[in-house]
Length: 270
Image (cartoon, rainbow, N blue to C red):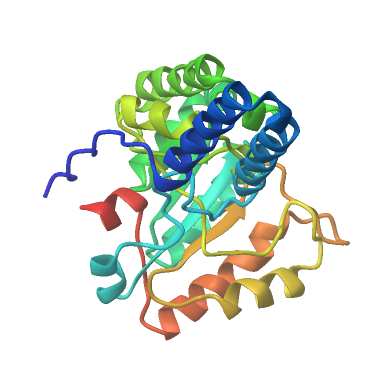
């Protein structure tokens, strides 16, 4: 079954409310100039609220966001393993072997310029039945403060790179660090991309304790979960092993024991 068509963009309630706040503040300042400090305070408070929401990766206030799988996928006992910041020539091949061992599929959110450096590795991800999705072209730390043109350039460059390498158009986008602003949602709608965050993460780019990371992931491992791991920028254990390589077998074994089926995000969408 082919994926459902992407919906057209419509301003969400928070953005509509923000426009109302700005309109009322302007009207108040014009009609009664002495009220301008209150009008300015209202606008500043509104901007602070919108910025705070953008710092919450799982928020739905700035537009649609896959923080869990759809109800139909949850009813099928599906979960999604999502793996960010690759491909990495040392780590990703070992991750692929682990996934093969458990007959599990995963979604790799790849950075465009890394994919261009290791195109055969990206093609191997797809060849083994996994999905390659858009994680921006450069994974810039200032992505969440970019304007719409800057965001569109980052996303389109990654789309072009990944399509040229894999022959498949990404359907999902994950923002660098999950951070965004109100400009992202209309860009995604225009490009036919869906935003995906996660329901459970173990902070495996910062925490080198594999047991601690595993515990966090298993605590949230249930039908409909979107699990976040990293093959790129992975923290190392005290023994120098990328954390994902020690964590993933336990996650896959627990999923199998609970009869949870790891699928790609496009499979969960279909």
